[in-house]
Image (tube, rainbow, N blue to C red):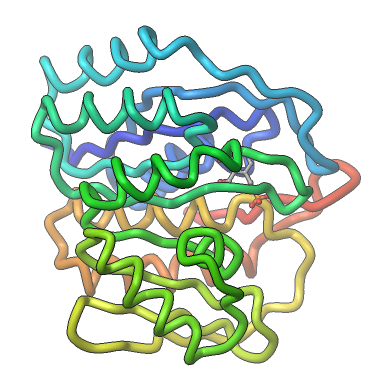
Length: 258
Ligand code: PLP
């Protein structure tokens, strides 16, 4: 049996982020990918031109259809868009006793579009963070979750501590937006670990967060430890950024070499 991974996230029509990036990542790492789509974005390398949230009934039906038939090794959660969708996903996952949940608290795209309504951050904190085995905010998302600017390593540690206290198992605060080496802070509730990689000079980074979090979920589906899954995901995203390419006229996607 192949390991299985489920992504609960939004669709990105240009294929670099969202559901498409997640399933490509699962495939590249040898995991069978499945999806429950929460919203559809019309976007290209230059930005998001439109968004439609799906009806909560069809979101719940996708989750139920999968869990009532198939054993799910790990779940990656990405774009959720609204409080109602967050509640639906949380209820669905709880009712099926989902495990190995990787929560990427997607909020704003690099091009500046809201992928989560600002009023839904509270619901994310109270309904989904407590279900997550690991949460993977970038600096901006960490700041929105904790209520202060997260712009150096001390604040990344403090943010990780606070997000852990919201009920997450582990927290990875991604430092990709700081200058210098691309260094993430990993907190397991006891100790801080720093995960460092060289910074790659490219503008083609569309979908990095989606790819990183689904690579962690792929590792969990393959029964790797969380620590191993995070380390392999870091190697995988660094490679994918190195192979990011010039698609369209704007910010191209990361790309995974097979
Ligand atoms: N579109 C969708 C559907 C996403 O889920 C995400 C990120 O999570 C993005 C776009 C943003 O991609 P980026 O900010 O890497 O360009």
